[in-house]
Image (tube, rainbow, N blue to C red):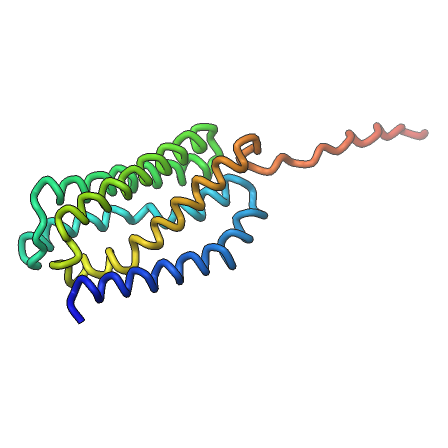
Length: 181
């Protein structure tokens, strides 16, 4: 089996796995968590996207045949998404109102980057020369990113009117105690 076919098969199996885990396990959990927690869970998958920086070493010493423009397009969109995801996680942890905006930015920039990197990867036939970590990222991590990006957009749109954190229950004030003498 050639490298491109092996990568395609591994990617398809990774998509099947990621979709199954997402639908059976992650979706039910995030659906029942406060919105800030649900977004945080999904953003954690995107926080380490800076791993795409490995494309520079893969091209220099690993035999990856990708133009400098392709390398930059693939790496820098992931680095920006990673930074946005980390900032959003920090903001949601507080919870600051900017957390929702940062989560939206991470989702939009991250999804646009996935589309862009996919197009650039196909145009440069990256799977034909990907090996080592590049192969692992393409075959395993990218399918997880696609599935969690869709889930992140799903949470942001379907729960757009919901507060980030659960509101504490409002309890009536305790009646004032009268002092008896």
